[in-house]
Image 1: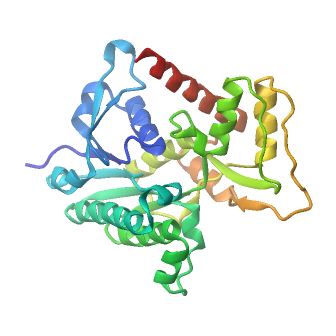
Image 2: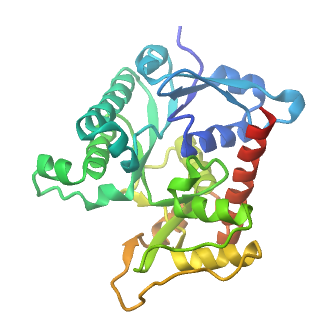
Image 3: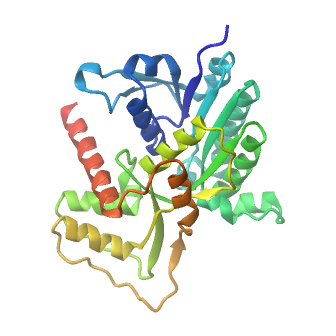
Length: 315
């Protein structure tokens, strides 16, 4: 007998994965959540619910990703948000060969699970780095120069062959479930702000980043999965573009910090990792959503960091 339709999240303990689970809690009562949601992570984890009142809190079991094909084999009408992948900053810790192998295994596991399903739809969390991979250039050559972007581009192609798939290419992110905040400019700045320390920029060149709010991205993603809408070409999830100097100045103003310290040469070429926002904004609107204001995104990210600090203190 087939199981009830399922909501599935991979990378369930990550920034996007935690957001996906949180938004599902806003849609499903606890009993239905427990019956219909499957979460997967790199290893078994217990994740506390974050959207239910204290009297209705639950613990979410994250299963090892390796079990995904087995646990989904009898399911029907699977709606998957796939957010499992080692990001570029993990290359140093893993080494290039192990990094490539681990990510290939993630993709192969998800593809195996999808291949066994009669009905599924996928929102694939990819990366802006995938847009830099050229189809007319040797893949292995690009894999050597940019393992993350090349593997993401290949994953996009593999998964889109197996199910209707909306590819969302993430650039910089905001949102309450930020992981490893010191690894991201916005997280590093907010950690300083919460300690009431001045923000100092070390780069001498201007750095520009395109930000998207994880809540906006995931809410529209679940709505697309529940629809019969056809997938569009990959969408860059940028709603707000800003220089890191401007971001630091905004955070300093919001938190009453001293002026930002920097030695930026504004005549030097800028480092830009961003994309136009029009397509993403239109996609949000088509699903009844609108981008959260950027100051609100910053505040929510800061509140998430405060909550993480409090949770650590309470343990």
